[in-house]
Length: 126
Image (tube, rainbow, N blue to C red; front, side, top):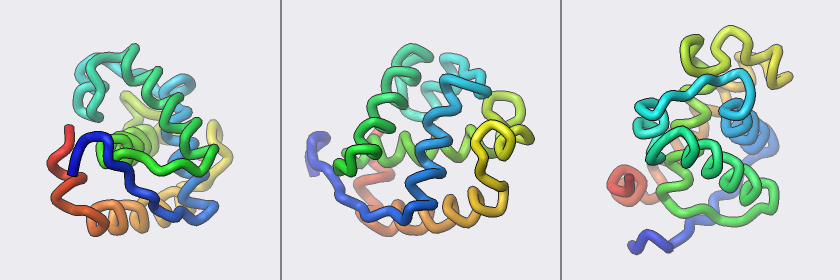
């Protein structure tokens, strides 16, 4: 599968909201470093900020994402949700309006679906 190949994964409204919130936190409560950006799959903080906005816009338009972008969206959201040092952490529900319960339910569903839909592709693409 090429890097330009996209995967059209149907999201529930809650899954979409959680991904959008997680991606959006990198311009809000989350405090990324270049190392965090690289862990997520971006080159640096600027690339992370621009990439998260682009991925969020594509989600808003209902467009399919590349395997790399699905992985970046999931990693961005996981870290924004859970990390109090780099993400929203304990402020998640306050800054996103989504409860921790809603977020973890959606994240578990997304983790399962994104790993089982094209497992080798999602794990192989940086």
